[in-house]
Image 1 (cartoon, rainbow, N blue to C red):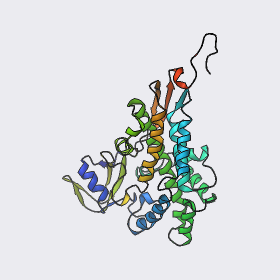
Image 2: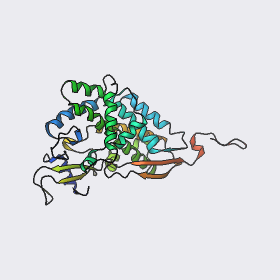
Image 3: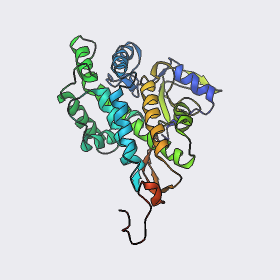
Image 4: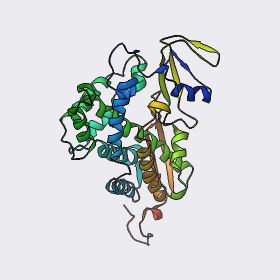
Length: 328
């Protein structure tokens, strides 16, 4: 991001996110875009309406999904140790992603790994995706193109929109990739970091304020914009083609304006179920071990965070009596 100008003042960031003179298209319209994140104008509005209809299918979060999330967290209660990423954030995010897209086939470990490797918004903006990202995106796209759609689900709606001429061939291929990446990778990153926060600052379930946590953590750190004509911000003049980075802290985690996150309500509902359930499971004997953050410059998340219980009595085992074997 060396060639980006970073906007610091919050007022400037709010203005940039809402300013129609700043484009979300990294190449300034030189090539047609089929990724909602990188589109502007009438095409963006058209595709965004379809995406909002897909997301609305899981608003409110279905009871079966809520139950599955609670089951994932309940499974941690008897664990001597667990990883906040692999054992908590990843399965929760995968379950919600499956509900959003509505494919009969399961999202297996290989596909979820491909989702994490998929190039996202600022990877394209910075001049190229990481090695393997394009192949990973193709793998995800092919999975959803071939998947059996759940009746009344997101994939089924998207295919109906394509048949009705509301979605192009390229958009039919790329929209599930974009949706799955947002529903899985962003949610996994947020849940893991928020879970770590709960361990370091314990709260009762009803004290877990997910909307505030999202804004504090800001799992997507920047939005990118391209200047389409002469523009002055805080006495700095920009020319057509200049690139701006808009930090999404200070209450801007879901963005603003035409590119505000259409899935924010689902993300908050998911976080409320998962993090409040986790808060109920955690005890004073849970200790955080090694923690490693992801090195990505845009997405704020953990690679892993090991949690261990130090008190056998709080693992749900009966007190040890003389001569009795130690609990497993």
